[in-house]
Length: 189
Length: 296
Image (cartoon, rainbow over the protein chains, first blue to last red):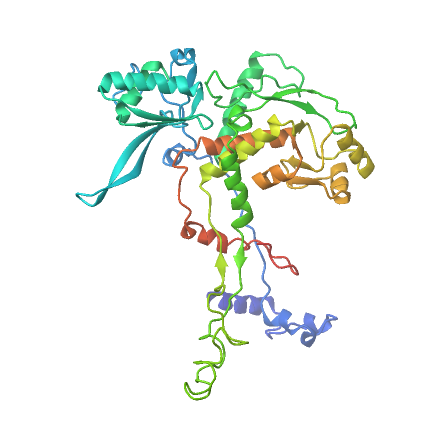
């Protein structure tokens, strides 16, 4: 509204023709009807916005972003930590076998619940809980022998175990995972 | 994103190491910093020769250390088998639909009465026993064999394939694959013969495109192919007799695989279509060629 009034004022003051079509269009080689769209729609001009980089401290944002890669464990004053975690020591490299830690710096102990026989009294399936030790390099049988003797001494009852040498896996039946973890921490793995 | 973090760590390590030690030959990287080397005394660090593709004879420029987690894992052929079957099967789609007697046109009426005609007892003209009748237990409708292997299995599959290639002397490292001088197919045949490359060769480079002699050669020879790092897969690694990696490709492969092995979060995340649906549907948004349809 204001623009149109200004334009009218400008045209009046300039003294040029007040008609919508200026005289210059008639003198141009291209006629109006040859390219009606050019004159029907107003000309669009693009203006690119200017960019200015502002130094911003993104640390407040970055500390909230999710972690991509597991970081190194920070140094504690004493081990084991309150949760019971111990870092691997050099004593672990003295044995004929080595148990590699997971990328999360934890011991590679996993639980498996396998279905056993059907209990005829309760008509429910009985389950067997196994502890699996993975990532065992070197002499897996020696590792299994040491582990089994340690567990049998502590528990008092025989413990069943299975060794898969190609995969470096040991399956233990009848022992809690805490004891197995204690064994591996004591060895320095 | 993960590989970028590793690249920053490696660059900082390399800066520290070069500051202390004097710069030896640029291509002999025997003391290459291996990120998060396994501490096990039973793991040897594998090495490979670095050579050049400018001459027919193998002019070895030096040795390079490879990361044992990738190039010396345990040879789990069962995991490799899972990867290969998955790759060959997960894209299968069956469009055949065999119509049952209910879906066939016609056949609503009993063609002849039950008794006294002497003919068989028949309910519809489109029963399976008839010519042009429906199928009783036919192949039913569009069906897909799509499934996704867990990330951990796929990563281990790649590591196992690379380990097998390296231990069986089928993996070669080369300093550069771009802008090679000689594009003559005969030169490349002689080169591969002299170096005992085998029936087929796969060149892997970091970049998307190849220019120079290798581009000309791979156009002329069907058994010689080039691939970017992001196209690396178990099937191609096993299909081609020899795999030749450029130095940049080796660095990038190690970065990415190690980034995934050491990533924070579970590796057994189940594949859900809803997590990827938006990404899949927006796949071709940026492609606006005036004539060709978008590549999806």
